[in-house]
Length: 328
Image: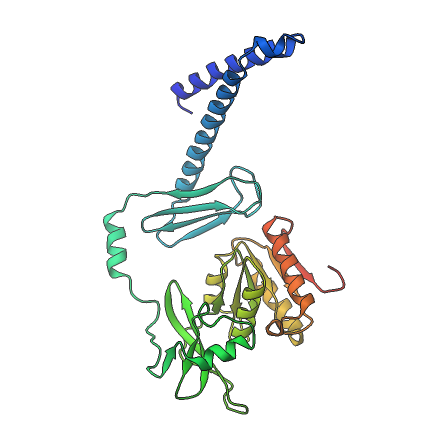
């Protein structure tokens, strides 16, 4: 707080205290006629405004100390409410986004940054993440994909589903950093092999939905189903049996991670949970033992996922937990 603001604040505070002392010592019934309550309320409002502005200045100073590069993110304790791992900052080319996810904390906003010559070169020279494009026979907006998606309660348009007219497959584009970097297709004909086909080799996970918490699953259908039914989550399908570096990169953007692999993959669930611990900006990891694959949308599985998301976003989970229906 600069000297001018500090002086203004102190003078207002003294004036407010004097008014409130007079009110406190006044006697009934003359109290309502003796004091100008609107003056007191205006002073209170001005003091709160000064406090809020100073807090924002301090927040921005704190963000500056992080010295983030373009496309770099940070997650840690909130400098205002002290929420554990609830404060996120992301540096974009044209500014900085920051937010605290703890309920009741008011920290959220943007901060402009000076665009340097290096920033402009970054924009000019930035190359695609991977060299990939969908084959010409993989097209959007086909009834085959829409009809199949509806059988799982999935919105084909929201999930950007395509259709492989050559091989009769529903195709899930894999998108990272606003680019299609890969795709995976599911055969529609009974007995058609392979059942799943990977069109590229990017090793990125398929994601579906918008939210603060990642729900890690094995396949695209489960990812799309859970993000459709449960709010505030992104289904993240690993498309394989290993947790890869690109998966870790994608999961670092979330305030919490729920590992919810198929019921026959309990050992793998525990293994992935252990691998994630210590590799993210946080250790807020929730491992669930499911009743069935999430793509089948069993009631109690969806309830468990919803409960886990609520606990993660409200700061009730710090560290790693493994939960089954019997202990939660």
